[in-house]
Image (tube, rainbow, N blue to C red; front, side, top):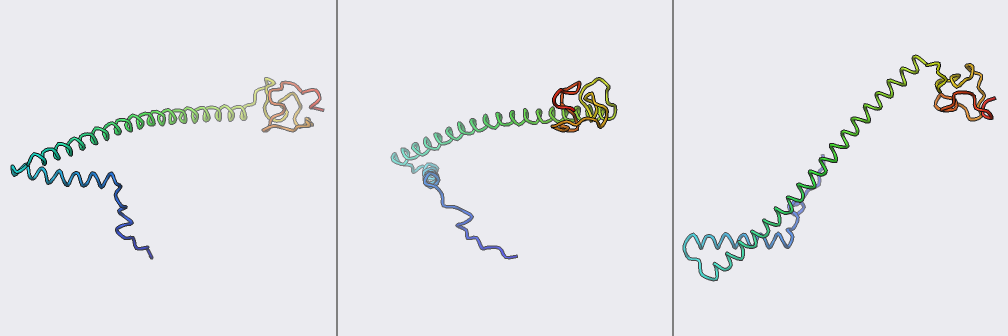
Length: 152
């Protein structure tokens, strides 16, 4: 199988300016912490350390706020998904119930004049000559007797 060769650059896109700044700050932090460990941290180094730590803290706080917002959005979406799944379950149950009712009526047609199979709208079987013809196997949906002007 021929697969195209991917360079390392394709797999690892160039870091953004913010990522480059963060990487430089962290490298500087590591160097400043090494100086602090050895007890050779100068006043200027201490000020740089404070600046870097404050920047990291601010970024961490911003990231946490963003994460809280994302979690809230995810919870809202999960509630919507749950509601949609419940609606699907209810719709499927309604569909199944209506299908059973339809099957029952087809097996045992009622003689109540309600619309049903051909001939059930008040016509003897096969005698209707409707201009509009049957609708879904029924004549004049809702009609209990022949409709004047429509049936001959």
